[in-house]
Length: 181
Image (cartoon, rainbow, N blue to C red):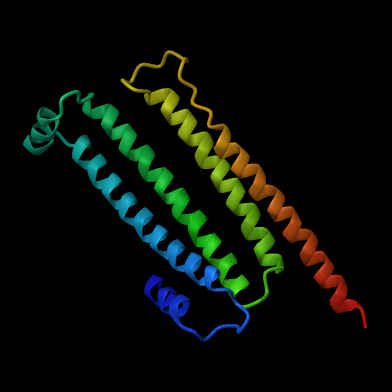
């Protein structure tokens, strides 16, 4: 599926007015999705390694200078896998929005729903990241002093929410225009 989308993104068949930047963005989103999928698999594999006592796990931990407990690494790997899955989903939705832009039809009601889903998923993954960092922390101790709020990420979420409302308004104007004779 991703290979077919990559072929479509690099082909020159599409709308004549699509900008080369949207095609480049489409390719970057595909690459990002591949990176998130690989990261997800690696995080789950590492979590499995940390969950099962073995000589391999012990040798990995022995080579690290300041290795925390395997249970802490297990939690971090599982949290990383959840975040990678969330961002994979965001990139998938964003690819669909970009595909609609490439075809010259950005103000679809589906794109409004996609953009809303994007900012909701990003907000949920950020809340999960903050919670996981608070619980796991740097050495597994929950002392309440490291609630890591990233203002830039929340600003980004609010921008995506505003863009989704602009798309909603654009879709409503388009629907109204189609009803006008």
